[in-house]
Amino acid sequence: MMNIYGITRSDLENFLLLIGDKKFRATQIFEWVYEKKVSSFSEMSNIKKNIQDKLADMFSFEKIKIKKKQEDKLTKKYLFELEDGNYVEAVLMEHDYGLSICVSSEVGCNMGCAFCESGRLKKVRDLKAHEMVQQILLVEEDIQKRISSVVIMGIGEPLDNYDNVMSFIKIINDAKGTAIGARHITLSTCGIIPKIRDLMAEELQINLAISLHAPNTQLRNKLMPINKAYPLKDLIEVIKEYIEKTNRRVTIEYIMLKDINDNETQAVELAALLKGMMVYVNLIPYNETNHIEFKRASKDKVMKFYDTLKKKGINVTIRKEFGSNIDAACGQLRSKEVWYENILFNWFR
Ligand code: SF4
Image 1: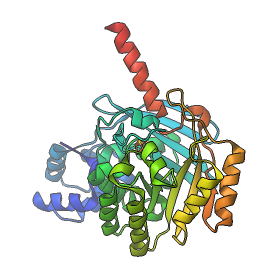
Image 2: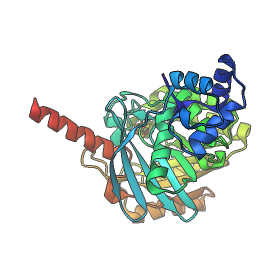
Image 3: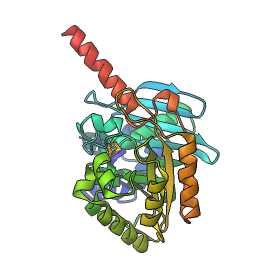
């Protein structure tokens, strides 16, 4: 059985044609599901009973569950329990311009970035499109407000779960789905080059963010194993191609790690690497965790790094900090939960 929250409108149209109904019914179903928020086909009063029955045989309205919530003034972090007992998380952030959510795309992650809590927990499986869509729906239901932007930057590497992530984007971007504008959707990748090319071909108007975190290949090899498969030089080339093809500015994410990638020489090196490219660099304060030895760069170092990039003509911002006191670093809440479950498991064995 498929989950109704994971099907795109065009796939639903094809299904309706297959069962002898009309294409336009898909729009009606989307209105019931995403606007009127019903949770059964029998409530869809403008759909004939025999079609309702066929749909009910094929699709479920099964939902994931909010297992835990932590919050501070501007941030809420949600831990979700999936049908198979796995956990993922999402973080809701309140900005001047509205509410944004950072969603997970996989249970764990195989990319193994040295500074990342999620990478410590190997990938268990891909998330299905409905499990990503539901992170948004459940949080909206919880806060009784609409979320206006989405960042795919939680647990997982979205381009390692390409098809499900593309369906997810199509559903949330659909005017009859959650109607989040493409320019309010950001996909963040550690740099899987062939998949960036596939993404380019989709001609979506979404934002692309690249987790770079190092200005040269030696350091990037140490921090991000993906660099051995897809080296920095080739990654920069594909980013240039992406900008040329889409005419969209690309975000370069750079986590500031104390004594690792935060000195002035590295800022000069980064500026040279990105010179002339339509990018902006987002300097991210690191959220320290108990399990990983990296430390956050000092404010002074971050400011100097910022100034150097600015002077070299690079567009740069420092990311406003969210949730550092509620475990909002990528993967932290899930990681705690998994540890907790493991401890319980060991106690009761
Ligand atoms: S930073 Fe992203 S890609 Fe790297 S291990 Fe963490 S979740 Fe995976």
